[in-house]
Amino acid sequence: MKNSAFYKIAKRELHIIKNRRLFFLLAVAVPVLLYFSLAFIYVNGVLNEIPTAVCDMDNTQLSRKVVQYFDATSAVKIVDNASSIEDIKKGMQKGKYYAAVYIPKNFEKDIKSNNSPKVTVYKNTSNLVIGNNITKAAASAVQTISTGAFLKKLQSAGKMKDNAFNIANAITVNAMPLYNPNYNYLNFLIPGVAAFFIQMCFMVAGAMIFVTDFSNGGKEELKKLANGKLAPIFFGKAIPHFLLQMTTVFILIGILFPMFDVPVRAGNFNLFVLLLVFSIASFLPGLVISLLSKDEMNATQTVIFINTPAFVFSGLTFPIWSMPLLHKVIAALMPLTPALEGMLKLHQIGTPFGFVTGEMLHLMAFIVVSLLVLPFLLKRKMSETASQNKEGGINV
Image (cartoon, rainbow, N blue to C red):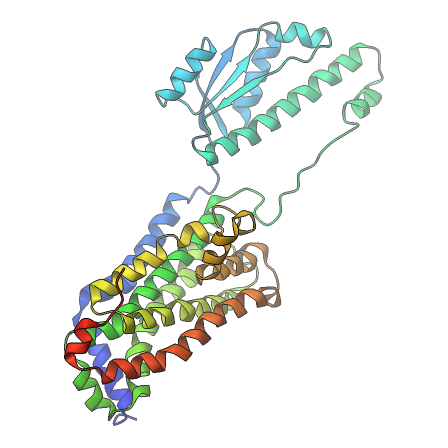
């Protein structure tokens, strides 16, 4: 084994990795640091105590009760009193608060007169996360207030207490959020961002493997160690780098997720199998880029060009089924898209592994196509003269 061409080339590659500390930092330390940094940003999971103002134009017992209900919700924190709608807008423009509750004049009077006064909630929807949380808090508070006021009205009209309660609650709408009932952004965003970094890091690692040797005159040494065979060169160079990158996947599943209580409802093993296939599906196209590039800069630019739109097209921020056809096609050409869909099914929904068969086949397509192309590209690259090598490559 020690005298085999594969062993010699793999040992040579490990020596290169050991001597290039910057490469090791970029391959392992930086991704792990990014994982944990992002996890700490979303460690609270649910957005609470959004700074909110109140504009109470009625200033009655009932209007003050409305303010109390709003302030009692965990999503809202009353921080200011506004005197008018214009005052509300100015406060938002200055960043003093992100929402405001406006209670009109004659609010209590209108309720007692069987009218339907409107409580207006102004919200800064330039940030959709804040806007959605304010909407949920407002709906909860207003529903509680409305039911209570209506119930008192029925009782004052002479209805029996039980009958009044039944009438007030004759029609109810229950929302039953599944799989992420607390709307926890840690559970939602961290796996998605981690998947993006996995694709980026594995593709960058693959893109550097061959182009570094071939642009720095290492081709002849490889030929000599491999006795002219392609397989030892391919596996001897690729496997050490792939295994090094896989340490970040182990850290993600084995340390990060448990530390921050990110659920993996389908089990760690199932998620690991998906991420293993995803890692290979990201790594092999990187090798293709490496064999098509003329130098390290060209390879890096190509990987960045491919990965820059990946997060947007992945479906995490906007559903793929609602995108135009062209965008759906672009999304399908990125390993991140099926991997992310599979991850959400396994870690958050907890589906059986058989339910991600479609995503696994999609990822396998990237692997099969890459493996069909790579032998021809490697053979061509190894047979090129030095002058040809300088002229070849892809440009972005």
